Image 1 (tube, rainbow, N blue to C red):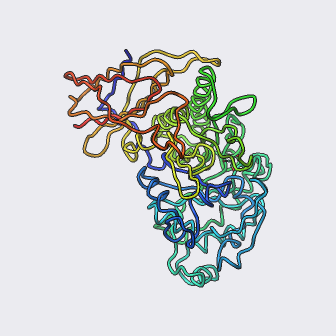
Image 2: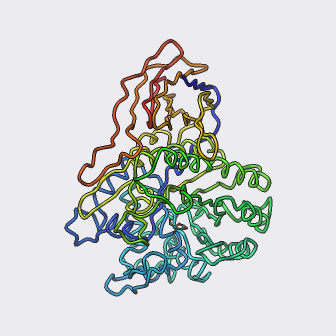
Length: 495
Ligand code: AHR
């Protein structure tokens, strides 16, 4: 039996809603087909956005959406994506399949999508191949309320009011696809570009995000912070990003066909996120001891081989219970490190990498990862509670991982939310939960459980779905639940 102890008197940090964010790029069928089908499509839509997808994303309370890339961001010229659609310039999407991008989804469409979703906006600007002037004019176009060349252009294009830009990324992966820069060079460029990301409205300050490290490149984090003023770096940036994908070596491996050892290696690789957060976090602590700069994990998720027969550059992969486990591990880690991690964006929303939604024509399915986001939805905006779990570990090819992953939060009004994942593919686990400082009220639970390869298809869309937990017992100050193998669970404890 695993023992989970929760100290209800110790609220640690706020779980920013943005930890449950998403990322969507002009890549494969994410934006086009997956989200945007155009006003004239036979697929039910509102101003071109698929109604089914918007509704599904609202149901998991999508808090923020990052756009337009990714590698695409540093090749994107925003002026190509405004004005009458038939006149918009076409471009080659060199990174992703070499397809023609017709720019029919641009700034106005993105803002309309976020309006429909009711989520915050996170625009990633082009530092790699764009100019300072271009970036500065984009910000003016979007956010300047008064009379100026760019705000007049926006009005001519049909939008009178300024929009709100909540977050602005100054370049993406500038150590790689965004210009192959060295950290000192990027830092100097960052300092210059971000200067012109103006705050025209002081009450709607744009939070600026600098490009952070790939995986374990700790030198990048150190050098960028140092070159951005060391302990004064917070004056230049509100966030520093981190990208890490869960994958397999050599080759990325099939998304649906894997043995048990590979299943555990994948989960071990997902757990590596903990080390990355803690080690990058330790460097950030040196330059930013007051934690004014958020760690922004704006690309995370699984990256497997594309589905057989699909375009390699489109990164379309299936999504199994293994992906649900990876999502649960990451989301629990983000909650537990919410003193430093202020945003995270899973890659990439629809039809690309670890998507929460897959579409085929007018059909849509929700993946096991979607259901995991559903089970975690109540944590958004809550206080993280101190919790410790004692239990078994699982031996993987690369080391040990805990059998049970967990995090706990308390919402305003005192309801406690516990999310657990039993990572074992074969063995169930009983978990005894002790709430220090409180007698539990009514407890309800819901869970996702299935065999590790299980996934939803267009033919069988409900193979994997959330069900109620029957096996919950409350005994004085303790709660006992029995988790089946390969299971993600959410418990709500009334005050
Ligand atoms: O998400 C796919 C790609 O992964 C992004 O475009 C890039 O930023 C990263 O390398």
